[in-house]
Length: 259
Image 1 (cartoon, rainbow, N blue to C red):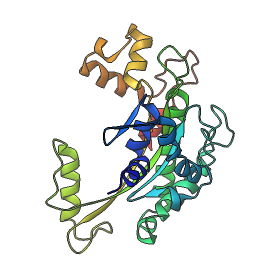
Image 2: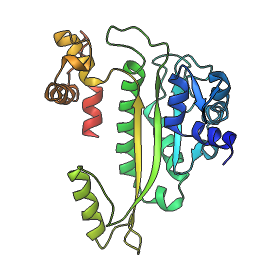
Image 3: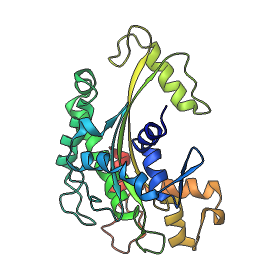
């Protein structure tokens, strides 16, 4: 495989985009490559995201909508009504967007999601992205990161009864139940299950650290235990749990959990 082809393939994936965006220096086959030149390979995919050309944003089994802090196209039209912080589109727009993204994987996938399910799913994604927009671009002191990412990814995954799920016992139990169910639209006759994985991501400090920074002055994950982090994240999803002073705040993530 040609070196240029390797670079193009790497730049088309979400981990690859993140690696190039956050890197100080890029090497390919022991040859140092200009970071600027490498980021130019990402530009066509970002342009496709900005133009809401989901077919061109579809790479393999995944559709990526990623906002890069400081980029000219940071505020993607699909996610933002106004190109500014807190300019996120309404939940009704997210409903249309999720439907369009699912449609890229074929009629079978989008038709398997009922209207009520789509309403719940859109509300969930909307609330999570609002949180990513508000918190994912700022450190625990409230300073805006010079480099940060946030976005939405939809991936089509196929698993079978011989799949390896690691130590994720709940996932294994769920998939085993699907595979044993006779009447399930997501299962093919060959025993494989087709799953759609939807992720809202950001490169902020995380729910646990942000909460514990406000409550006990933690500055890094080295200052807290795993148990403290788990309890903090659970608290963040409780109604009216917020680091803000207003009594009207702290409902978004609880709505996401309800959805």
